[in-house]
Image (tube, rainbow, N blue to C red; front, side):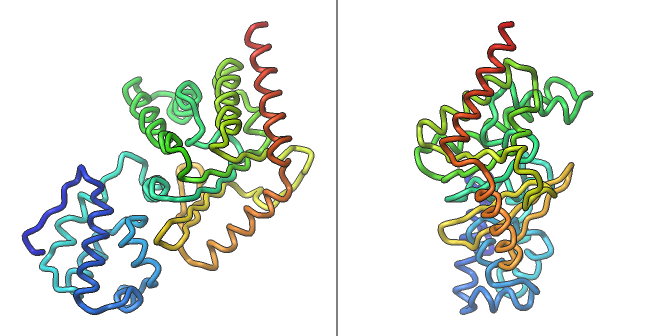
Length: 278
């Protein structure tokens, strides 16, 4: 292994995780046994091996020492850590790409996976009003590449709860809103996604504090992600993930059923289309 390098163009994080599994098993250690001297859980090691967690350089140094891998993980850690997303969102975006199921609550804007180009451009411009056109173009391209996950017919399963504010806030104007809501309605009608709307009339709810993203994986423990303005936290602690899962369950119980949500989304889209023509 000592002379081997990973190809950054071929999912370096997944390759690094696969090499970690091979080296750990060769050393005769379980995931929990490797995690103990690193002061992390066995499930954290499992997430590194599955590629759903980024290996930071301090872990790479310790792993090389424990597994006697002659600096392999340090040498390849930087390649696996490269990301086109902001630091606070990079780990979540890369985990999202490997998830088999995603459940998300959006309190203010359409989730990135459901945005159209014009909507994404309006959001990115609002975040960075003085950025150059090239910078905005790159941000929009990255966001649309994330949304390409939904080109797969069944995986990941995506279930979103949208606050009614998402529908009512005019991002980019009536034409942009009509387009993005019709896009969401089309995905619902093609049975690609599940969407519920949490109406204003419900009042206080279980996640007034902000957004939630829950991600499940085929061979790694689930993750929860919570995002604020320029910040984001990725949780792997089972108790913390369970707490966010309960919050999401309470939101789905409070939201409109899927068929009523679809009717509301299409109705609001028509209102925007009418406003546009008027």
